[in-house]
Image (tube, rainbow, N blue to C red; front, side):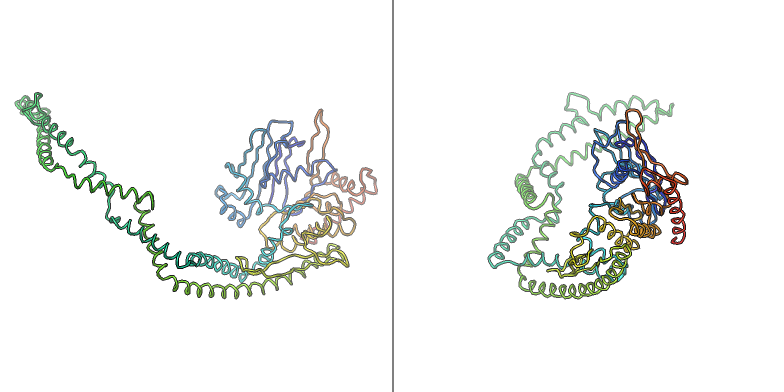
Length: 566
């Protein structure tokens, strides 16, 4: 649920910190006092794009922050959507900071983007306001609403089965289309693949070591220079023909110089041993280089062979893959493909049988799902029609209409529409194309009441759902919202006393001129202040003793009703 809403420098709101409670919360205030700004700030917390004009004149940036208290199910869903929580913390904190130059979003203290916020927002809050798009006003959602109603395992299993079968069918259709070729196309593709296989088969890709090939090729191309370098190195190590002393002769001189002192100084003895070992190593290196030099013979034919091999590998990479592994993978693919082409008739017949079997399974499962949906729909129609009647839409009638899709998709074979009639003598029409503002508000309330047990939304917000109603109808709507608040947190923006009096948490929105500014503010009202606000809703600007008494009596009756319906 939404437990806190902090708003700083938002249009005419200087600073508000609103605390919401579980159950029924109501916001009231005179027209233009800032009720719509509260709702707009919540919409921003749900991912609505911010307009720079919202930044007020009290500071250089706007800050809106919401604190949500989550149950384990909602928290797990958000974690699966990438939201990070501190250990054992069930709070979700969404912060938006907006200035003329930039906008920043943080979720639980970490920078995030609007995409993830929009993905998780349907789990947090469901808002209905007049003329707004809504899950119940979108035909694409109807099939999901029916399937989720009662949330039975059989429906879940059938949906999973149908989705898996449709995906499997699509995979086989791709294969089938790949085999749907004329004889000429088969011949052309087979010839091309054979050419490619022959080109790749010219070398043994599985035994090739590119590093060794490159090393050998470079060595053969530099064989003479390498021999000269080895010869020079040997001379430096130990060769009396060179003008300079060799390393070996210099080490010998050193050893002769310190040998006589080895017996009288242990440190000198250590030096002698180390230099002696170094001299032995130089001699060993010389011997190995002498042997290695004898192996350095030119081989023009091998160099040419390696050059051709390197060029062939380069051409294969250019055509079939960035490296040897890619070329091998491509080779395996075209080898399998040419086998398909050789057996194309048998494969076609086999795929025909497989697709026919999948279609039979799809029909069977889609028909089962259709039967379950029809049964659910009858119960839904009955419950929603009862709720509509309770909401004083006397001649209202709700019906679910099924039609069959041309092709079964992942949701099955059913096309669904919600039909409604709100006046006697009218024909049933699609819910999306009928009903006046006041009627559609009550119809949405009926839907929300019926589906409240089967969705994951903890908070529902109604923006002036009472528009166009009064008297007994307003009382009925208020009682419906009260019943709904026993299952979910409800926040309602209202101007009717019958509804406002039933809330357990009443927040008053008002505005006043302070110096050169008009400032909107909120406060939780109780006792006398709440009585005066209910009296204002009853009688308008002129509050009399009669309206005050009526307000007091209405609040007492509302408290009794709340206690009865807990």
